[in-house]
Length: 132
Image (tube, rainbow, N blue to C red; front, side):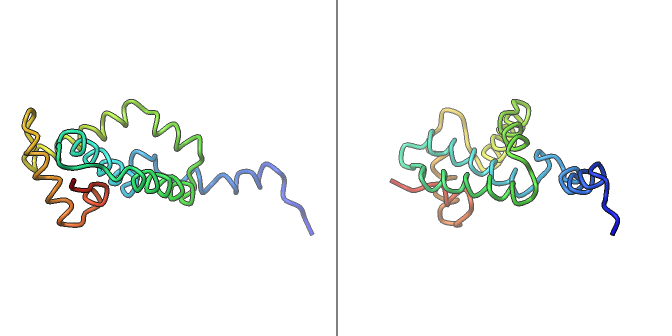
């Protein structure tokens, strides 16, 4: 039986990770981070809605585990979460969503209406919120 050189084994093991798309393009992860940002904006702006903080923390842990199962390393995940450019992008998408749904700066009730609708529709955003 012929043994494979170590370099070939290392290359074969590295192939799945190398084939992964950047985390900034991973739809499932980005959609949930955007939803979390939207929920955070609603809970901080609307006086009659709170965030389900412990639930959100658990969902964040599940999301990180999902990324690891997809083949992303902890270093890749941390770099993505620490990226100022990715944070700006996620925040911009969240703000655009809120604006399209009717949120207006200086009008907390516009955020409340969005939050109540998300809760009623049982969306991912709504799952992170609770009416007081």
